[in-house]
Length: 94
Image (cartoon, rainbow, N blue to C red):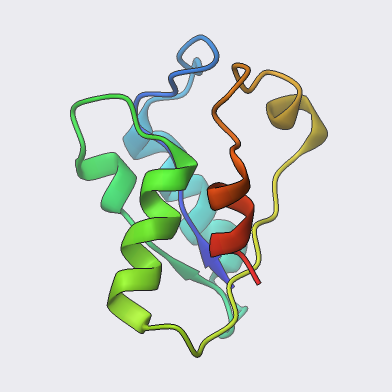
């Protein structure tokens, strides 16, 4: 499982914890879980980071074969702006 913390959420206010603090919390949370890895690509972006953009990057990097699943909390899903989860977004996930 790949965990991707967001740096600049475009659909909600910035979290109280800094990006570095959230990264560290995630490191601690998965330290004994070898199937979990952190991906910092969204933390490296200085612009708003959209899930669709990240999924498209993974698809380009991994090719069409590996399955991609998208897990999101309901609280975040409900704050997605209309039109940001197009059919192409969901097709990227298999």
